[in-house]
View 1 (cartoon, rainbow, N blue to C red):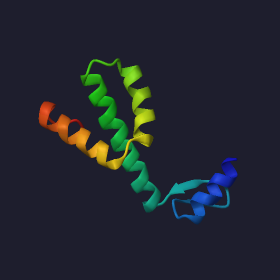
View 2: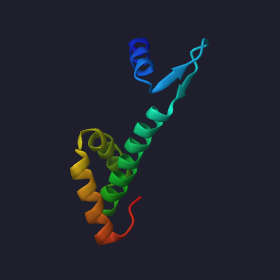
View 3: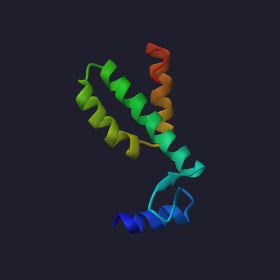
Length: 88
């Protein structure tokens, strides 16, 4: 349930919740969110530059951003940066 997940994230220091249930992303949670956002943005832009439609590129980036290792992502990003310039 979302309540159980929220409790886990609170205990791990990713979020804070006030007594009204308002969720605030803490620094630790914001770092992870930015990490995933960078992956999504870079991967979707790269796929689009390869000719994939924007809709499919965004869907595929959602899958890849969570499953791709840091090493593979870094190498892919470096390659595309050399070949086509900035992808962020």
